[in-house]
Length: 206
Image (cartoon, rainbow, N blue to C red; front, side, top):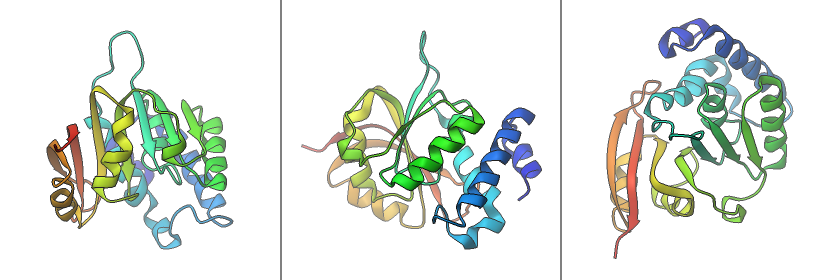
């Protein structure tokens, strides 16, 4: 997938595409020194990473009245999906990444692209909880663990958007032993074997 094909698929503006191109350029440069993404995925960067992340944008909850939407992204790594969503205009985006070098990369790209982000360079459990409208994560942990991480951050109408691979159904079955939740399964636009899980109202089973 080329950047232009990505733009056609996602309907981003020319300005947003230019900012994402800058992000992609910095990613390829930094990846030579630190392992941000698997080197084998670089030839298909725009589908494997950028489209995979951008597909969440249309499923974000509506912007609350009188304030920005607050998004928290767990285990941001190279910025997928959180930094992509920030560049697309998701709102007030918090990126949590404990690896100091990856956090430095996120700060650099945020600065250069003008993305509205807050970088928390610590473990999720160490971040003081705040009220978020949406929680995102990609390839970080089993679903039951993600829900436990998300619980302290979720506002009254918050939604979780988690990108999951072939194990999605198994993880849902396992999580259902501990959690009650409303789940929408959406086919991935970047990987036919993957799912986007949209989860509302997760609460611990009594």
